[in-house]
Length: 71
Image (tube, rainbow, N blue to C red):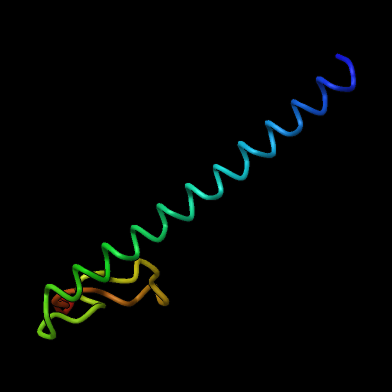
């Protein structure tokens, strides 16, 4: 490959990378808008943490739902 071909390949690579970043940002913004519109349509009765619960569990003894006593 000569120098011109290398420069063209570099420019095409940079352009593809920039297009990928722009696409990723647009998809991220679309997801945020979708989430916020779902919250807005739901109203104030349903809290954000109920619609979109945090998947991270801070403690291993933390249980979601009813807890039955050990028998």
